[in-house]
Length: 510
Image 1 (cartoon, rainbow, N blue to C red):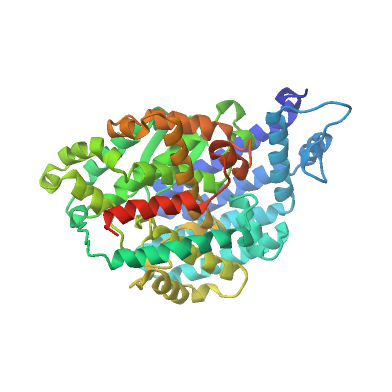
Image 2: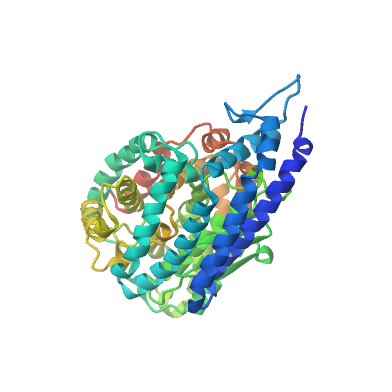
């Protein structure tokens, strides 16, 4: 049987490419954290050059020659020849490398460089436009990026919609046709549930979350929780950025960011937990496979499941706050001394349609994703144009959430994703919500007394379970296969719907 040793000429090349991509990612991380404002144009060129080199190396003739020895080009699967067979890691590595190679081969190198440059520039303009609440400032960059992403879809090829080509980059195998029934099932139950909650006689007061909270102490508490989750600060960092994100350059160098608002306690608290979930996934990848697909996360939906599992299933649970609330109360004694844990639990789980996606409650969060899913499909398909975005955004926000953004900074400019070309990314957030509950329910079945462990501040049992079941496999399995291995089922909206109906039915006495 053939093993990974046979593939050493290929894995050596892949490692070189990964190191170039990691260098580009470090420059991107710095761009969002410490780079001086005037460095933007030079930084865009630096990142574009590195990504262009990485692309050229991936599509080089020697890589194609190596792959052609071992992969059946008709199926993209490892080819068994002369009675030889491949072990499972080798089969998976060849399958996923072929997928990456074929996709990269379709994109001209000069196009890759141009797209990288324009996205880097657009991201910097977006930051300033959001700060100044000036959509017109960002519009020329958005038009450019949008046109390039339409061009990318045509290079890649697609069935039914160019949007499918972009969606497949983030969630392999996903299509509009496959996602629409999932979103329809959610909408059919979430919208009536939201109506019952808004009409409930129970009114939750969350004003305690909006007192004045020292920003340094908020960050210190965030670090404390991240440490308890198992996030390794010897191989990670916590920094500030305009939009919280996680960057991984190697399992030994994984960095998370947050943002802090004096009068928004939830913002720093839950973005630390959320990004920490991403960080644990990246730190939990198997180092021996670094540089190959087996050392990379399987999909954005699975990645998001890890952040949402920690943020919601753990971080918004009673069990979690039985241990951590006294610590938070001690940290902010003056603000929280008269507030008991049940009041705090209710406040952080208050359901209220809101403008900002990353600060939305877990019930209305999926409605934020639905409107973005619809908008970006129409943008890519050319049914709407970039200049139409603010008006359509406001219209759909009112339709889904019953509120209208008073400013573009709270509306069409709130998310960073489209500035760096991530069209097709947003649906993975909802997939992550669904996967998160499936995984957490399975963890409760397999870890005796898990919720009791969480209630005593012991989070490492869950962290180890996730690493063994999900993180360490990288792209060994497809997203659907991985979910089935872990839970016995592919993605299923029902566990999530039952979870929110039970939790919020109790909280609002429905």
